[in-house]
Image (cartoon, rainbow, N blue to C red; front, top):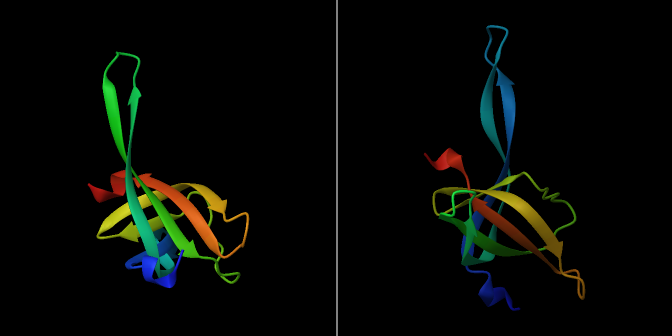
Length: 110
């Protein structure tokens, strides 16, 4: 993999809360990293109990590893205006230079 392959901009964020001055809280996106990545769109299918085929739009995202950025399963990635939830992280086992992240579209997009 070369730096030239990392040609799509993505942002990583977590959902958090901020006080609303009335004793409650407001949900907010806490963006902690914007970087360039290699993004590949994947499609998966699964048959449900009714025998119908369900398709999920999945993405495989590869970014350069950084020690100061803790990417966690359950965090979100914003890519081309779409919110993806991270469900799998696979660090590169040979060089430890890249993280391979898998995510699917979330209902935050509706």
